[in-house]
Amino acid sequence: MANNCLIIGGEIAALRATKDLIAYGISVTLVNPSNELGKISKMFQSGISDFAFKKNVLRSHLEGLESNINLNLMNNAQITKIIKNQYPFEVEITQNGTTQNHVADTIIIATGFEVFNAEKIEEYGYRYLEGVLTIFDLEMAFQQQKIPINEKTKRIIFVLCVGSRTLKDGGNPDCSTYCCSYSINQALRIKKEFPSIDVVLMYMDIRTVASHEYLYNEARKSGVLFIRGRVSSIERAEDNLITFYEDTLADSQDVLPADLVILAVGGVPLSDYDEIAMNFGVQLTPNRFVKITDKPVYTSTPGIFACGSACDGVKNVPQCLSEGGAAAMAAIQFLAEKTEK
Ligand code: SF4
Image 1 (cartoon, protein in one colour):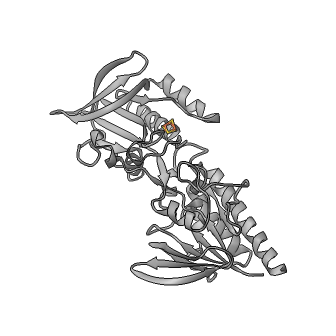
Image 2 (cartoon, protein in one colour):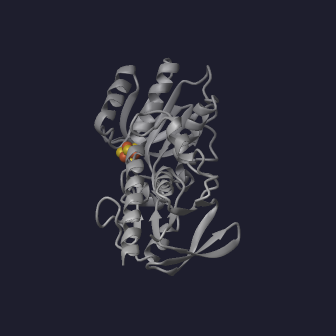
Image 3 (cartoon, protein in one colour):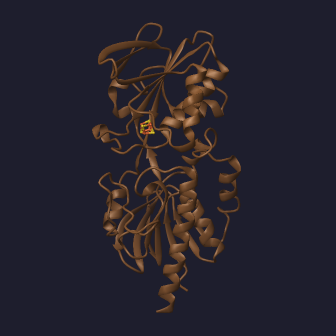
């Protein structure tokens, strides 16, 4: 059997595919655009059951992986050229300024998503207005036990759908699927730890799918206030932030002061990988994710498979894990067929 798979990515779907292929005796070159494995996945280690996963899930996928002799791990690496886009594939990989050519029998695209850069919405003041954070900044603060809340904090506003469900500012026109539940979970956590603080969520729609509806109900019961509104801008006043918004139920313009504004940033396809995928002959969805032409992991190019949030849109952790396993199985089958010929 031909035995070489190139996997592009470094998040949970890529890790699952890598682990399964190596267990099957297939050597893997893992081209990870990030400087560490599982960087975004770590942000989903606490919180909500379907979207989060226990630390030991990520740990068990990383354990022993980096030192496995069947893994050629390339962090900070990019595919910079497609030299041959059919079996056996050939690509140019650039890592830390050095390029090398690589031949692969099969390829798995598992690039995941990148977090929408909130700086693109200038009116929200991310990075230059003190007190404007993203849900991932807040998650890091929770993990490091450095939550920016003190006795003076009176109100915290979460702004949902930042960089999702919009064509503006390079956003993802699709729903990012995790940010309602992720934000409500954080809002609940704040409300439980600091019951006197007003916690407000400004939303377009609440999409707490399946069992996550319990979070929404629990948040309402605990006193979290939900306002159906679109935030137009955030400004700094002397002591706090002023949030300007349109109340879309009352059809009125309004303002609400807050000490912290938390932006629920969504997920967008990884920069430049739409072009890479197209050069492989792989079709894309209208929103620049890899298109799955045959469920669950087949792309339009034979021998190239895709899994996790790289394809069809942002997905939750269990979906990424199962698609990573499915992509590995599809790659194994492809390699077996090539050997038989
Ligand atoms: S999950 Fe909620 S916040 Fe995220 S994009 Fe969908 S509707 Fe917006």
